[in-house]
Length: 98
Length: 502
Image 1: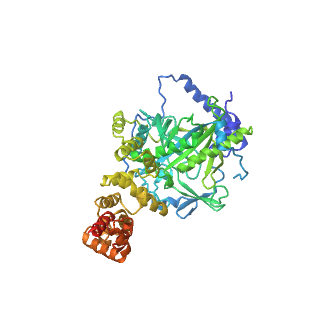
Image 2 (image 1 turned 90 degrees about the vertical axis):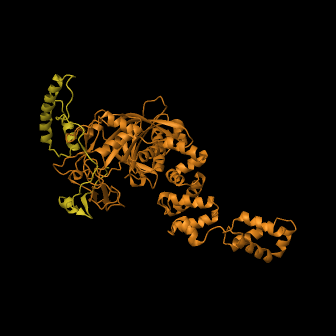
Image 3 (image 1 turned 180 degrees about the vertical axis):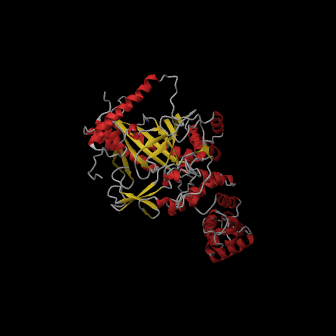
């Protein structure tokens, strides 16, 4: 039974900035269905006494003291920039968003 | 950007017919030495991209580590806002694509904020106290800074390209979110402003941030909706982003009330969206349609382990909380004996700290207020700087007032001495000596000047001798002139009378 619609795949793809062709939308709707159904099976067997796990390690409070480390040299920072100007990354124009 | 004229309803009319509800999100940049998740040093005004590490740039494989001082500051803020502090909380990724966000997600907190369920009592200018309920305060990181090049005057739309500086990316932020603020009525703008200002004062009192509005250390997003009556369900809200001065907070609320009322009057719907505030024109304009939380696809940050502040740590921070601004204002007003209106002026001029320092340096409270709220306030205003930026210290002002109190100089000479201090001629004491400003306390030179003045104006001298003290001021004036203002007028008067009655 399909629970993920083609429109939902298109919407999620747009949020993730992934450009999908129509045939890919159809295929992924089916594949995502399988994934969602599989995860749902885990939910079915999970009981309230099993705490949700977001971190596999039983570890908390890993801190860093507020002490500076050397910054990267600007030349290194900009080395991977597709384009740079005045010590800054140059990026394509940003439209209407915020 | 749309340029069509927007209909507005007169503000007073709008709040008579609609009930405004506020919601305010305030971001404060913490004043830590380094960033939230890496050791890049944070310093205002550095050259572009000189304060970045692989973590600030989101380079592959870079791993974040939490700044302990930032967590401590967040707990202090939570405690000052009467919040519960989480036993355990975690970070989450908020996913969105924008060039100022190099990782394509912002590390934030979502379902487990470090502080929650608090309140803040806000004192309005007339002394009324309004309680704002706080939903949460959570930790996150700032984004980089875009500069838009080309297009019309650097605005976003029409820009040809953008330049990005990541120095600000990763600076620790605490975001404080209110619950819907109901029952504000026509005072909505004033309450919004007072709330943000009270928070700013608290950040400074806690010493967790410089909290300078003009530098964007404190930024407010103002949510506003209207409904027919206080009993109606909440209306559709707009969120006006990045309102960065107290005055703008007030104006943006007023504007949105008037704008939304016009839409509702016309039977139109308010669109749920973010809006931009335009300081120059005093209006908001449509931004993007507001994303739902699910569009951000939050999920727990796998690279950071949970923060579980020990209760002993939280309690020691609670015990060490400084006096908060409202309490401090009340205490100082009592100690200084200022009238309510005087204290209000001092508060509004942001002069409390400097007057306190001046009093601590030995000045009388009245003297400290006289200088900082008078001559020095005028100079700060004309130079467009803060009082603290004037080239005079509280210690020097205290010394100046001390010279007045001891009678060594009078107010007029004190202003000249202050002039010298501001011109970099040294402490008031040095200026008084160097410029020879001291009041002439020796009667000898005064008597000489009096005799000369009496001789120069024989008619007046005769009148005074015959017991008519009316024109005595003319003689005092002449003596003051002859001594370049350095005589004690009271003493001169006594001497003139002595001299003429002999």
